[in-house]
Image 1 (cartoon, rainbow, N blue to C red):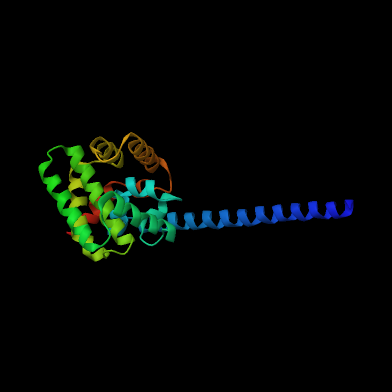
Image 2 (cartoon, rainbow, N blue to C red):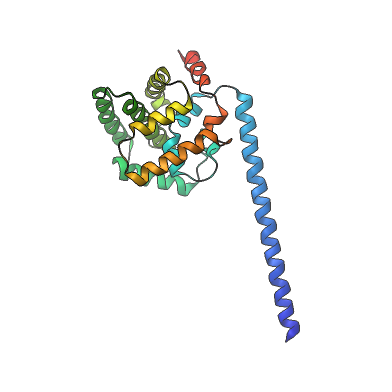
Length: 218
């Protein structure tokens, strides 16, 4: 009887150790993947347009997704459950469930943009537009090519009025107008993380690099 119990205990201990080893291996693999992406983007120098559009939509993207922010710098890195969650949020928050809905919502936001002479509100609306468009690409409603010109306009507007990621974050929160107190708290917390975490697009690419990208595009 005691021998049987002892064998059970030993087997249980072995199972725990194997689980720890597997978890450690997974953590190491994730760490190496993240470090590899950091090296890739730093060697790249300036962001691509894809990197740039996604980086400026990160205040919302970072709240709604899991894992390191570096995953938010390119399309296609979200897990299937995250993509499905994004679809639900687009429908819940903006009534978007297909490409036609994306166009309708953007027309409404553009009208609000035109009527607003408050800089902070305009910066927020530009960031919101970028979030909606990049999310629509992420879930497959539209293509990157379809959003490129519109996103360039929003990025150019932001770049012409803002001098740093810090100022962008501050103006974004000052102009934020769609969330309740709890939602604003989450946004503010994530903006703070984006400003200081080494895996954040805002820490990997300098604000000055935005101008370099826009110059090559024009």
